[in-house]
Image (cartoon, rainbow, N blue to C red):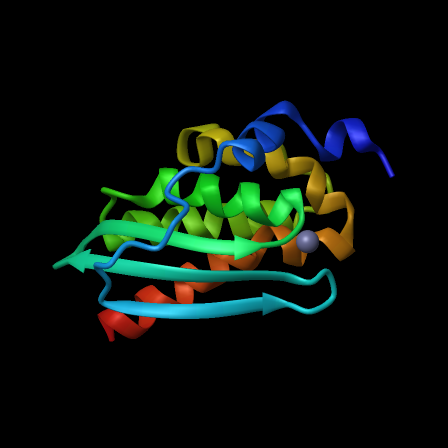
Length: 144
Ligand code: ZN
């Protein structure tokens, strides 16, 4: 395993100092997602304000990739419109399917491009996607 490309500094920084970790009292919905193959778990609280992602807070246990990815995602999507957040989700999802062939859209994904190397390791893609799938699930339930 290429540890250098897998655990980039950005990922370690977010793992050590996660953003928006700690569940807020405010929530429109709470979802809990698991990645049994690695043992990662995340609970995510979402607050929407009309079409805008007003707040995301989360708690979880798991590997550095899963926890860092939720942290990066929270940072990216808070304050974005639902449509923008879904575009960011799609860009990240596409990056994870790229098998190491894409470096990601930095305009949309910002720190999220640090996970590009993860797409070469099928077993870790679910780690990286865990928080994102939780957001997609939560936001879809609130908006529909
Ligand atoms: Zn994991």
